[in-house]
Structures are given as structure tokens and as C-alpha cells.
Image (cartoon, rainbow, N blue to C red; front, side):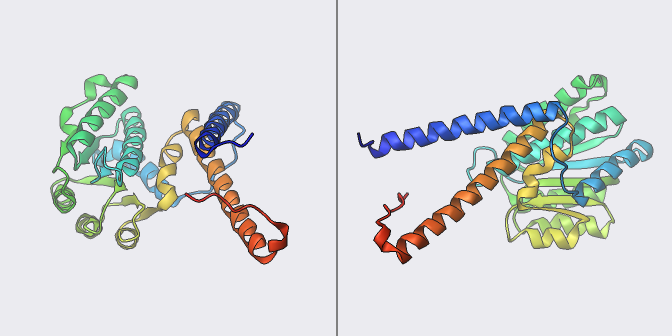
Length: 268
């Protein structure tokens, strides 16, 4: 029996989903048992950890931001969600240590999500009485340049211990990045756009490049769920790379040795 294309695609999707679920379960059990492999160090997160300790002593706030991206936009949603998770992890540590956070955003939907996240963090850590809605500020709405200018203004008005900006940014990041550098504010920034990363490298003490952004949650927390997610992402990335290499080799053999009569690879 020859399967039609739609049925074949459905089988492939089902197998892929089953594999992902299996990997998540496996890595979650390994994380609970403490058997996950050691991660390579990322200096950017050391900057934030050091700032958390100092903030409780100096009283200066940590600025946290999920970037200027919007939730629901295909181009920026993934990075914005990663930024929200990073804010949650740092805010949780800050609430436990008695440090102060100041959270900003450049999108109304992200702002509402941040208010809920920060409030829940304080309640979960038993510090609900210390939560102040003014900790979460909406600087603009879906305007990258205006948001970067707003962060630069915030740098000028507030005495900050450090600033964590992980999410979606355009080259306008230099407006706030340079302001922070001029004021000697330790900054940690992360993005995936090639146009923005060089500017982050020039103006911040720690820069997360590409896939490092998506590992932020696991590096900022010891939560086993976050660790399992990171390990699953790494495993899936390795599988995709192996499949790509195998596909290239298959195509080469098919072209060089046509006598084998190998069937062509399916095309998207």
C-alpha cells in the first residue's frame, strides 16, 4: 500500500510530537535526579547574579525588560516570551533577596503579562506586601525607537544597579545601550537579530547571542522544568543538524552515483 502525501506528513508529525514528549519526560526525570550534563558558563548571567547581591545592600533597583517586541507578532513573539521568562526568574530571586526591580516594556499586551508575572512572583515568595504596581512601567506601545528612548530616559532618572534587556530589539537599541554605558550601568542584553547584536556587544558588559537567549530561563533558575526544557531544545537541535547533514550526503550520493536509483527527497 502506498501512502498519500497528507497521510505521510501526518505520520511524521505524530512521530515528531511523540519524540518531543518522550524527550521532555526523560530530561525532566534526569533533572529531578540531578543527572543533567553541566552547562558551559555564560558570563552575562554572572553580571546579573552579582547585581542581585549588591542591589539588596545598596537599595538600587535592577531594570528588567523583555524587549520592544509584541506578543502575537510572528517575528517577535518567541523572543518576547523568552524575555518574560527571564524577567520572572530574576524578579523571583530579587523578591527572595530583598532586592528591588523596575520592569519596563514597549507593548501593552507584554505590559499586562509582566504585571501579572511580577505580582505572582512576590506572592509566591511570600512577599506580596512588598509588591508595588509602579514597579512595572509601560514606556510606549509598538514603537522601537520610542521605547529605546524611554529606557535611556529611565537610565538618566533612576540610580540602577544593573539592567537586563533580553528580547526583541532593532538597531535603535544603541539609544539606550550607549546611555547605560555612559552612566556605567552594568547591562546584560540579548537578541537574535544580526543588525542589533554588534551594538549590544559594543555597549554592554554581557551579550547573549542567538540561541543563548533561549537558554536564559534555565541559566537564571535551578527549576528542574527549565533545565529539562533546555536539554530537550539542545537534543532536538542536534537531531535537526544530523538530519540536515544526512540529507546533504544523500543528495550528493544520489547525484554522484545515479546507478543506485535512489528516490528523490520530498520537497517542501
